[in-house]
Image (cartoon, rainbow, N blue to C red):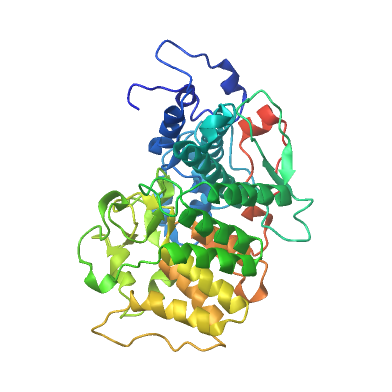
Amino acid sequence: MKNLIYLIVSVALSGCGSAFLDVRPNQGQRIPKSIADYNAMMDNTSLLNTFSSHSLGMIGSDEYFMLDTRYDAFPVGSATNYMKRAYTWEKTIYEGGEIVTDWSRGYSRILQCNIVLDGLLKMDASKKENELWRQAKGNALFFRALNYYWLAQLYCDPYLADSAPQALGLPLRVEADVTISVARSTVEETYRRIVNDLLEAESLLLELPDNMYQASKCAVFALLAKTYMQMGRYDDGLIAASRSLSIKRNLINFNHLDLDVRYVFPANGEGNPEIIMFTSATNMTPLTTARQCVDTALFASYGDNDLRKTAYFHHNSDGRILFKGSYVGNPAFFTGLAVDEVILNRAECSARLGDFEGAKADMQYLLDHRIDDVLDQKMPKINNDNLLDLIVSERRKELVLRGTRWEDLRRFNNEGVFREKVERRIHDTTYELLPGSKRYTWPLPVEAIAAGKYEQNSR
């Protein structure tokens, strides 16, 4: 791969606008032609598996806050100003000129997938039964679906069955030709594309990947479960989560970890048995260790016998509580797919469908691996009446700073019992994000609106 420089690399961060049209290959570039070339493109982990499109959601969620002094000292610059405005959910986030955003990174990865899919489609029919051909196509379909899923959680309204056929969705690019004009779809069409890509990918992929950066049937079912839950299709979510767990259900027993080290989990996720598919997010200025304070209510929600309280958090010398529990094993944030989330997803689907025993079994299995054996206060009493409350609470405690909290806040806004108001106070000003607010849907970047002539999201 080191001598193979693809055209896509030159445009990887330029977004979905006219900048693509100005790119010309040079002598160091070559157009991919072979199955090996296309698999190499899908092994481009620096593009596909890092800087995932979670920044706005993680900045806007309620898992952390900034002290006034650190907010005041926020660095000024086009790359960071929109993050400061996102922290207080401003109506206008982008000023224009932001080069790297969740949107541009997501569509760069989608373009990579479309180049692979177009190239594979044009190959001789005899090559299409090749296992490597199937692997390349399956990976491309999965990563396209994954990025459309991520982008939908930021730039589309939450899925509601009544409004999804009319609500603004994403521009669904399914071809590599960027000169083709693509209008915004509906939310219904966006989710249908995600599901269809995943179902096709499942028929092509192995049950487990060669490495944690690649897609697999296990990852397909894990992402399908998340997607169906966003759509309120808990019966389908239950099936998908169960199929994922039938392939992989290993959990780390936190009783066997050294919880006193600065980073508890293996560096870069290597050897972590819970990881199904690895992606990470970085470069979120409000969430760097220099600025973040873990939400006090979140930290207080862990019992003294809950090992996650030590595995996930660190008491800084200045009194702040910092997050250290990323499955990346360093200050970056793990945003991929892992067994613990799939277990929580299946438990929630089971509880919503009335299978309380199945849900309780999943929660018992998870908490058995998170609660201190020595203190042995053991589990909170689980009964049918409080089961869903427990699952929702455990989602927040288990999946800290993985990008899932923003998705859950949006999803729970549709249910009165789990609706929450998010607040931030800066000096004497209180900022609120109310349940059901239009601010749960972020605006499209200025350049995307100009290039695509897209209708802007209402805020």
